[in-house]
Structures are given as structure tokens and as C-alpha cells.
Length: 132
Image (tube, rainbow, N blue to C red; front, side, top):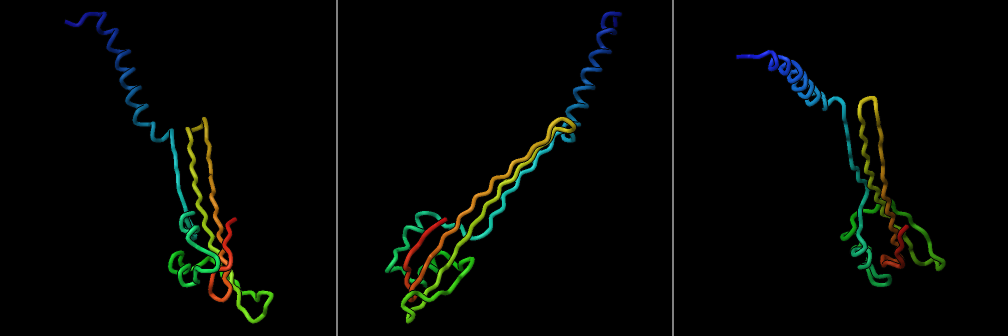
């Protein structure tokens, strides 16, 4: 037997259940987020850079260990009978993320990491190494 009191309870309960269902199915439309990561160039760790010894490491070793440089430039040292060359290895990592709550809040962030390593050769042997 349905009493008058249980009929009064059924209406508000149906409203609560219906509202909860509606909000749970719409939440994908109200909140959004996105993140991405992009890497370019050659990433070189400190351990690898520490293996390069000026005066003994050869150009062939550097090429096999680090790969092709981003740029190469040739120069003539003070004593003109020798050949100098500088190889530059560049690396960049960009992390981006953004998020929004529909009509309430939106935000984003971006973090960039850069590495630049220089290897100078005189007559195909490392003369010096430095990083920016």
C-alpha cells in the first residue's frame, strides 16, 4: 500500500537521482585538459660530456658517441697551418599543459628546457668543450 507520505518522498528522490545522473554525464563537457611534450635536437647527459677529454678524444669518437651536430663551423687558429672546427649540439624540450572549467576558469603553463654543448677541434682532436 502506498501512503501519502511515501508519494511525497518519491518526487524529491527522483529529482536528486535525475540531477546526479545529468551532472555525471555532462562533466566531460564542463572540464577539459590537455598536455604535450616536444623534444628537438640531441640530448647529451653529463656522463657522456665528461668522457670527452681535450687533447685525446678524436672527432670520430665524438661523432659516434653524440651523432651529427646541429651546426658545424670552421676556423683558422692563430697558427695558420692548422684547421679548427666547432661542433654545436642543441637540445630543447617544451612541456605545455592547459585546463579549463567551462565559463569559470582557464589556465595554461609552459616549461622550456634548453641545452647547448660546444666541442672545439684542432686537427681532428678535441681542444676544448663547454656548455651554455
